[in-house]
Length: 229
Image (cartoon, rainbow, N blue to C red; front, side, top):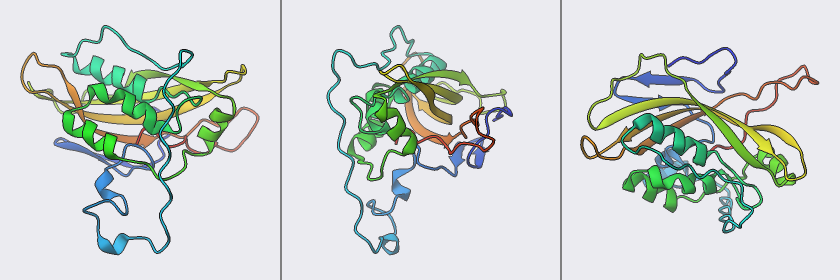
């Protein structure tokens, strides 16, 4: 997978022809690797009390600014991938307590197993400094989703496909403020039950991209906040 010079990645990604493995930050991680998750090593249990889970977001109101893609061709793996990314990274901090709320809205494109795993997962950490900034402006995010694939990935089969995307977001404050939104390289594994059947996202690996430095500051900004968990 290629990454252009403008997309400085905040972690190293290793890609194989049979799957996509990444050293991820606070993105859509493998829950089995999290401390305290059933199946994890008992020796990994922390010596301090774990943080309380984040509360769920509020039900969306009439003024919620979240993406609602329509006309998505479920038999097109690329269309499904891009629609999923638009929803998964489409936050509204007036209603969402963290990125995971948007991730749950994208569950319509998950396999049943993936959807169940995400619905049972409760993030325990804070949503990040950038999220707090967005929330201070009651901001929502919109994202541009582009293919980040130079054609050297695995070839699609009748029931298996991989897609690599670059997500670049903008935050829009309800007070008129505008800032940088989520930025990430996202790698998806999609499956379906047979030819002509709808594609569903089965695995997600996210690597947060560094936020470009502000023109007023010579130093690089910190990485984007936690992406959909």
